[in-house]
Length: 124
Image (tube, rainbow, N blue to C red; front, side):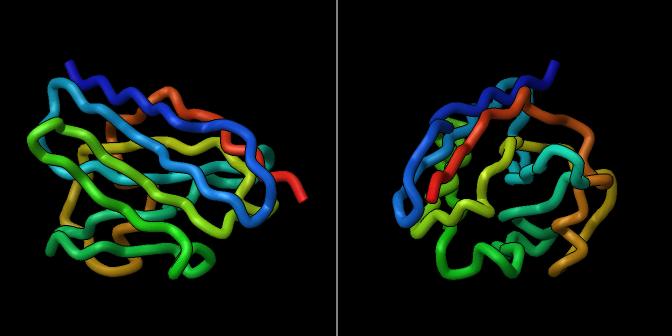
């Protein structure tokens, strides 16, 4: 059974930083980050594509960094220079159903397993 458990969310002022973590059990493959704003579709934030390249959504490039500790089966998302528009529920995901490269890898519909999500609130 695959379980993905996120931690590290919370509230921060604009310009601040947060680090999200996701610990996976029952899964040893790639992990990815997505987010969803109420009333909007879930979107890819930072993922590894099928060539193991780090792919970022345009709005977070240069501010967010995805990394992993394979020994701990843990995924991280370092978020810097946070903006109010980054306010969302962030999710860790795994189990891409087919190979995907570049921006295609940001498609949330390809992922099978999801964490419970955590809130990130950025105030102005």
